[in-house]
Image (cartoon, rainbow, N blue to C red):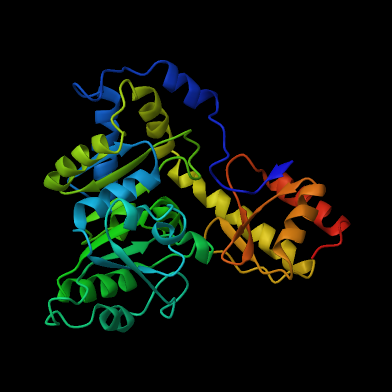
Length: 337
């Protein structure tokens, strides 16, 4: 099988396994695991934030951030099909207590226009029983928009609109590494002004698990308590943090995944597919019947998943350019689409 389901299907290579096996560890609840401390300090610096906190998953990182920022019943805004809206089992409402509102992608793939954000926020002087909007969540790259990138100037405009209305801003940066590589910028250039950011090491970078949520030192102290509340207080997790440190060294390698995504998209279009041109490592392709197409692809030895009403192919380090060419050969032989 050639597996395009996600960039989370990668397996740790020998270098990463050696780093995990030899990691210095400690009890990260009673004290601080030294390898986790090293990862948190390095991740905070890379993301341009004062402090960072390791979490077992990106979903927990986002939930922690929303739980810290929101009060029960507060409304928060996020682009339509954002991960915090569609892929986290409603935890933003159920556990963080927020009322979500999805915004259209009228400013480009994965992002609203600033004026759309302003209109959604509305006036701050409404009656006491009106919803209170307190948070804007952005996603860079936007998964369901095909790994779409928000460039810094548009990020700044959205941030300014939120700030003028008194909102806080959380950035779901699960794949912020991809956005940074695509733009040729350091990740910190894409987090300017936000109150918090999450980032994942298991999406594309090859680590078996692990994310961080970063912000001010006060935010991280509150986040640490919330992580414990959610069951994320783990012990000798330096073995996982060591893998994340290796992953951080591999951010520049993501350019190769973007090239493979373009290679796949070009090949699909040559075969008659209407594949979107990818900005990063995700290729979306509309088809007449998603279920039938996915079943047929699997019969040809090609694995993919549905996303936003399309078929999603995700390129990653465990799929080679030769694998891409072989997948295209199989798809052509299968008569797709």
